[in-house]
Image 1: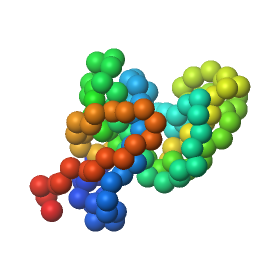
Image 2 (image 1 turned 60 degrees about the vertical axis):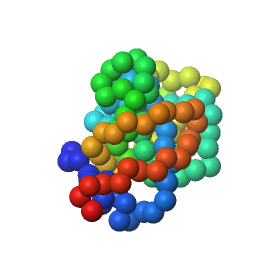
Image 3 (image 1 turned 60 degrees about the horizontal axis):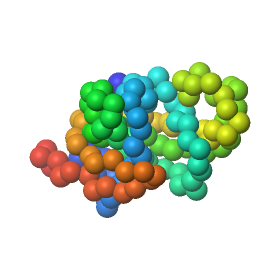
Image 4 (image 1 turned 180 degrees about the horizontal axis):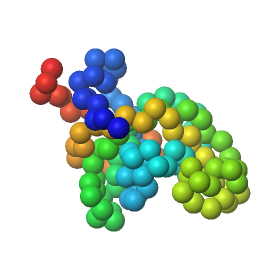
Length: 127
């Protein structure tokens, strides 16, 4: 997987981007394409681009950084068939967030928050 320059994303999109903090090692697995379903206990109506941010703890590199941009394609109750893509066992209370179109970016620091939040992408020096 190649690293997408933020300027390529910025040229297609203006304004802030929605972000989601994910604990490690799950954030690295999403960026590597090994985990294509993120599990939450809550739902959202949002669909579209989502910046995946590695939480600051545990201190697994790169902690506290944006790692990739994904497309949140679907949000639905978890099924047993989701276990491999979610890298966890089924639970009837889990909600599957289906992630597609994973685009690696050059990591940059982000202060994570709970829920879906917005951040402004840093200005690229290659513009």
